[in-house]
Image (cartoon, rainbow, N blue to C red; front, side, top):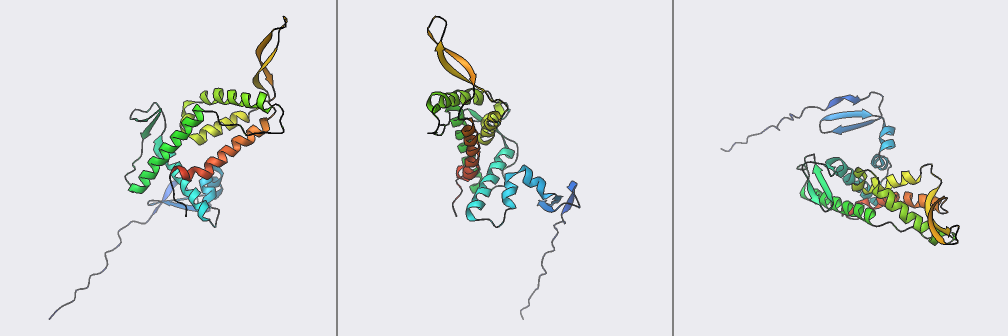
Length: 243
């Protein structure tokens, strides 16, 4: 005679999630679970400080928007996992760049690790390009001084200001662009440009003069557009598929 043995399902021994002692506010309107810890905070704080959460809370998500969100998530992971700093002790040299990994990536599968490495390399190449070559200033047919003043001034300004930024900004293209944008948005209304004139003996001499740059408004718009383009194309750096 055959017999049938019934086995009861194994009990779930996973402990219930616990509330974080510092960041669980009863009046919060957004609950986040990280592993086995619960956070309850105000949604507006997340949206105010992170474009990723702005996109996350903007529903419904289209396929393109979701791809951008994934790209930003990879980008933020790199910013938190990899300290792009030349003074780190345990370095992985990549040309003029160095990476110091301070978090465990063993929890990622092979595909995600490959995308992170590809994204890091691609972003490093973009940063080196921004430091080595001045981005082309957009044309402005309405400006009569565009070729003689605006473009040379833009080229000189970018070279001087970009190389003078703190070294930490050299390794993140978005931070580099934002830093340049902040400098251009400063209260300085006058920009140094080189002009030619005549000295007292009637000889032509080149001198540095402080004068308004005609295309400054367009320069501010272009820097803002560079940031938007980076955000819109960040997924490309990680070779994320198009849905």
